[in-house]
Length: 615
Ligand code: F6R
Image 1 (spheres, rainbow, N blue to C red):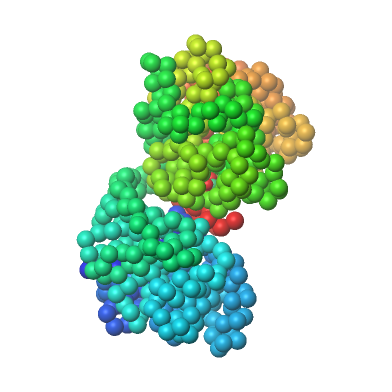
Image 2 (cartoon, protein in one colour):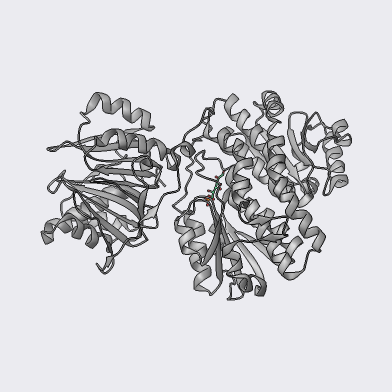
């Protein structure tokens, strides 16, 4: 995880690096640091805490003038978050400065060897080992930084996106990546380095995304050189035009990114299906699916791999694919799949779902599936991300940058894409009647309006939040398509408000969790009129007779559940299969308000990071 930023050019580097780090804080925020080269000396400042803490400290401790700089915002892997373990790290001579996102797995034996050679370590990090390894190589071989970085990287095992600066040769930054993302912005007489393009979008719209195993020599007034770390061969980098704009990565008047992103859902769902969904013509068209239709149609089964919220979207997709396209689906946690010797063969289609497109476990699951001959299809949000490039084909969700650590719009847009794929396959296989197919297409087109309607539950969600904000535990229940929504509702609550919450299929209650119910336990039941309504009413009755406090998400006009529940939140009616796109909205709002009322850091919850690039 961690975010890295670098600048080399003619502007003041410090404000660019600091602003960039703030934009990357979603990647980690337990400590931060910056190095500025002022033309003579290296100015270093680092601290436990957030980028604002760094700014405060830097203003007292260093002069910040200089046109070369690198900075880091950390999510600790090796060594607790403290000042010393924060990046940048210096080599023993003080000449080399490094920032690193990733993990050097063989750092321990390398460290032992370096200690034998007289190196002293100040931090507990793997990164300090790497920078000293580079120094040792440079010293022994008497070579320039780029070559030394290359030789050193060929000795390390692990994942990295790094930027390294050498005081002895100060018109250059060397950057490299393996398994962690790295974008290089190319301006006129200036270069930007960052974990994603957000730190530099106002300066340039041209970017190179380094591929795994590539490194770049970035020199002032020279053309950047990209080469393969392993064999030194030169690469002609593809310069991509960025689609991101500044507005997308700012809060736009909302108190938090999470709230902004919740409210963006009507628009981004539209963006997701724009140009793909044509209800009037009865057509769904997605290039990645059309080009590989035979592979989908010949598949014995679909295996979905993902983590966290994306895994929940995968669970919704399981119900949808099986119902619409009659293809058997297995949904796997990527982290379990990759380590359990799964049976995969060339007739399997594997769908990898990932907002960031960088999740290490999902990435590893994809590689495993490919090695076993499966066709791998990605559903990613971040354009050009590692997963989008590692998969054989895919479909972007087009949700725009999701900055709040808790995933919201990524979830609903993932479900939208997956629903469209299922419908496309259903059409090809004839597993849905013509009229049902057309009805779903029309209904999907109406979803953004219904989400807008569902967002009107905000005040109600706030009232209920005020009532339950101090609850120590919470249960979420749903059936069928809304069982994964119950899991997602519980995850949202626990990750941003730190209230313990569990999601269950409603009927599973009597097999254990019902023992938890008493008059203190809030139970959130997703009970839309479509689906297993009568069954869920019975489940609500079971909770009621044990004095549980019921908050029910119901279809507008519902009367039966209203009589039983303590609180209801009304949402517009939609078919059972599409209901997760609507029922999830009040649950997002409820978690949001509870977290705000508990004074939690909504956008940057403790211990989390947006992009989990370590396994
Ligand atoms: C929860 C959340 C995480 C992510 C998970 C996978 O709100 O955001 O559970 O869903 O870390 O991340 P991606 O989708 O980027 O692979």
